[in-house]
Length: 556
Image (cartoon, rainbow, N blue to C red; front, side, top):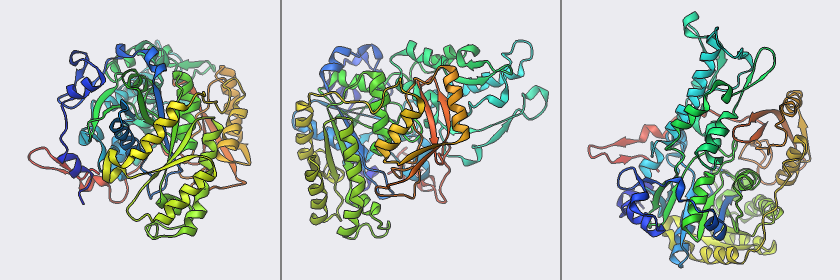
């Protein structure tokens, strides 16, 4: 059987002008990046049309090494919706290049539910990540330059500066570094480090901005640290936000590409979901809703992370109202949650499945708490038995949730016709508005405790002395009314990655709380969160290659 990149290479990819014409976008309105990629200018967004059309969110159970295929299902569903006569665009995040070279090998869907050109999207694409990297690092350089300049500095206390540098590569050696070595002409020595670009606050800001002016203002709101006399310093105090926004003037425009079946795909931004909001940009979602009757989008990792942040942060900032939510599950992943090892998940085991299905059950309960119109997609693998699939179906029926099998890797849109008919019916009939999990006006502690107890299922939340001190600082800065974007492991509903399935009676520990005032949220840190991944023992980069014709191999 052909692998993803072989399937992609055989696909008959269309000129991007043809894809734009499906949406009703004129060729002259596109900003071309070759034959198969283009940016769409912001002025084409029509907020009246955005309100008229239907947004469908795709989320998933807690992710496992067995894979759930949320992106693949999102793409397959959008293709199927078009096949049944529903004008649909899929709107996704851009892949982070570091993980592509590490473990992932690619993040553009799979099989016959991919976005193309997959090599470009997985690597440099249209340069958005590079622009975000440059804007972020410009602020880093201006901070150190201000500390170095003794005549006209802001009196910044370097010990309070939390702003690091970023690069879009997995490089564990850069997690903690010392800058400013080499004498008085080389800066003031201080400890800092590197994060990956997807973890940058600039990435989060880009994805929550309405337009270029809003972006510039949000960049100016980035909290830097304090002066020696305890005065807070923001990026606007360094006069950095104008130049940062100038570097992002092209990156703010969403990218138009296509699926393997010619469905329009808008791909823009890529914040991590275990640190930031984990969804594509508000701008991209609005662009899709301007030109399509239906938009399929996704939220990173499980429903407890990406979807919760999608509702409580993105939808509220962007005034978005999803009409259907699809929860993706696989037999393999649920068996893993039930205690089966990766070597055994291909073997039929109804007992492990019944044990692991508690994870699905909790996520369905969470969907209902937001008062959205839910359904479940079973992403089918060849080793799944009919008995195992029926166990999941019966659990969904027991909980009053519609369910359909999707076989989109092998069959593309044809493998999701039943799912598309079910989802479009739900979206058409849904008349309600989602209910946020909390109100922004609540105290920081109450907001965190509400998510931990209602969404994760925690018994209690413990705040360390450092976290309590951070709350005092946030209150003093007047930032306590911002939403919370909890940083937590994606592998478990709890803050302990070892607790699979549906853990109970656990305590969530908030170690510290970071400020992302530019993005417009605060970040309670639970557990160990990695912002600069490392490469595995044998990274995918070892198997990548390119031939004399420029054809890439090794991506998947």
